[in-house]
Length: 454
Image (cartoon, rainbow, N blue to C red; front, side):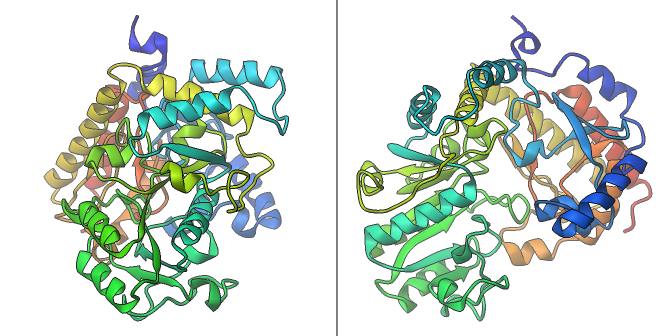
């Protein structure tokens, strides 16, 4: 059976569409009209800030349909998709197996507020695949998972403080919305109005990939740090990889100071490796937060880890956390169907190969045009930096030629390629992408590079 027939390769027709070109894209009259209505209803006209296209100085097309690797807007423009709903669409949009499973589930009822059959099935698959997730609790979002994991870490250690890293994002929970302030040796100030100083007063932010700064933070706050939260591969300041000793070094420091290590694998879980970043790097977190892929396009999150820690969660323990729609039956079914597809033999290898070909094609094309460019990648996740070398932290990320990205993004949207509207967001590839899709992106990039500002 071919990959395409069993849902593992490009959807039928996708290659022909790519070769034919996606047409001139961008917000057409119908998108602009809907955006005008939305601006009167929603702050900034959107329900999540990055969708507004504010950072690239344009207006978002309004997407009405998605199939395979392609999006279609209300004006009929087609786009090769490289955001994948910000990660979950790892087998492409409207995958036949996922659609069939969800349809069967909805016909039986969409929500009951009771246990459902696919909850333990999905949970069992997660536990069997993630090496250091022994038990878990499903929630509705990655933000909720990180908030609950922090509460659990504080309860388990009897400490309040938490270390996080510049450029890492762990959802919009108050404790995580803070900046570095005056450096690693002081607690943070709120990074958003409405966040009390008292809430972030126990948050310490240090530079990513800087073990010395972490050690200084421990020294400055002895026996106060409950947990370190880290994206093992960062996707929220663009794609940034950890140094070889960074994650093992965090593990050593946590062990030395009686602190819990929490991997935020909302993005990396089931996307950079079959067993997540923890399996890829062989580093043991005490707790893990998950989302994106495990919902198959529906709102699902989870947190899990050591069995003794998870036994502290109510109703088994006294750490309270609840959710009316947690373990939502449709999300459980969609996530289970998605994991079944991506975990078929050879699928992760194929996904990594497609992503690498795209990254290599972009690097080669841009460098041939005289532009500094580097495209780091892992599994089905990648980034693009206008720089000679990939940044290691937020300071280095801000020092790249981010001014080029606005021009690049506009050109790509017009050419029918949908990129994240920010240089500080990772890109996501799916098993629905193939050689023709890669050629479409590289060709559009080459066309822009001939007139790109230097």
